[in-house]
Length: 495
Image 1: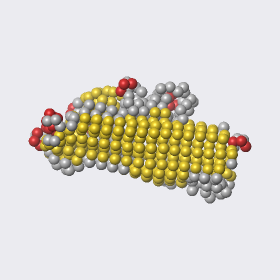
Image 2 (image 1 turned 60 degrees about the horizontal axis):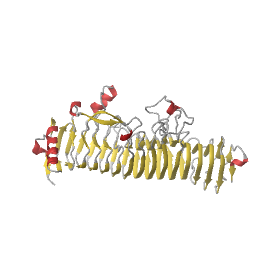
Image 3 (image 1 turned 120 degrees about the vertical axis):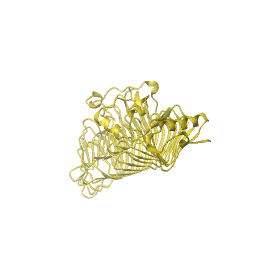
Image 4 (image 1 turned 45 degrees about the horizontal axis):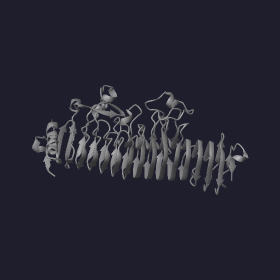
């Protein structure tokens, strides 16, 4: 395939001369030749928005930097979406739509110089949504590999309604205080592979989305068949996040072999009434987290953008309809989290739609002795917590296998308004003498087996409300002062 050197088209590599037209001319010539590679040699190239063509590889040599213009006029308005809603937005620095076989590769850097855009957000002077650094829409066969992406004006890499996307061995670095500078946000995409990346950003590191209820139905599509492996994620609001824009649904996701360090949350699923959509068949394994506020969140009362509305304030059951979101078949295993601060986990299903079929297996969570306090989930009515244990409410089919919580204040496990719960092994090596290890309220059918009460345990299990069908078997509770308290009737418990 032919190669096109941007210097042959008049590009100037001094970092001061606007060279958009020369870069675009090289890309257009490549397309007219039927495809090939556009090569950017070492140097710094000041540019505005560039528009890809099919069958085009942009190769950034080591030492090459594409430097984003700071003039909004260099990013023309295009019709795109922002947070699930179609509207005029500034074009991305690198992007295109309805393309096939496009790639950004090499060892160079794409620097969006987003500081001016971030300040306009803070000053509330933006007329249209900011440009993304890289965004492809309705494309097939995308490869982004090897490069560094930094200082994005908003989301860094945003595939939208794309198929067969591979993002490999890239580095994304945006300041921790930069607004909405998510790392990689696949939205309504199929067959996405994200591997071997380092992501250090000012919002979520990886977020999986599929649109909102306000979008036209024909524009909604699921995000499905995603693999996220071998990545390090730092400082973001979340390590891997699903939602809250998930009206089209999210399914078939594997997250494995990753390290999260200093992210606010670890694995986070979020939605609310009205959104609709189903998140299902999610597998998470082999994760190490350090210094996260809350390692696991599943929240169907997500409040951001809807605070004060009945759909997030009302905790009584609503009729189930197409606007009822659903989380089900989420399985998490082999995770170590250290220095968690707010809570070990917070699962909060709807009163009318429980979080269903969730497994946590081989999980070790240690709370930070000097950690701060705050709300683990952005949901109305959730109090601030500090060093709290594993909290689950409105869940059905919850399996906790060898889940250990250490250095918590209060119960290690709080389970409310739940059914079909199994706790096997695990517990806490550091029981709070003033709290039960397990606190259950309004739990129907629970099987607790293979657990061992540690020295210093006051009460192992406390039952409240209308809990019934509780079976304890094969537990070593001799070191607990009281194995069970609060049973409503002798029929509540079977030993």
